[in-house]
Image (cartoon, rainbow, N blue to C red; front, side, top):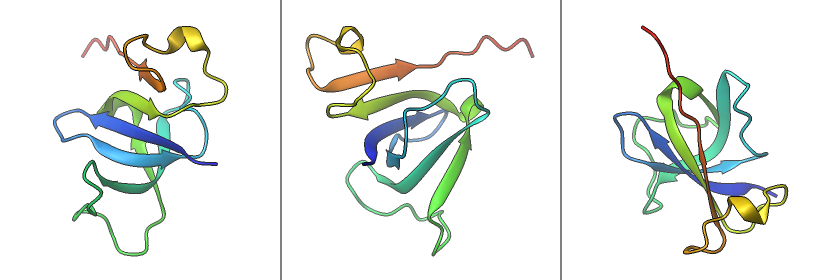
Length: 95
């Protein structure tokens, strides 16, 4: 079952996506499917027929996982918003 997520990208509006698995911060990219705007409309910059998209972690600010997600402890879920988990991946690049 796909995990619905809101993905926040650096310098762009957040997008909705379906994830096959929980994001792995040790990978170089995040695999997403069914990309769309938060209002459900399609993204104009995607190629017709494309089904999967790889975004480099360096482009991602953070990922919000929507709904109940197996494998995520209840401790990680904010008390004020039950059913929503925010995973943050912050990099301290020296460039």
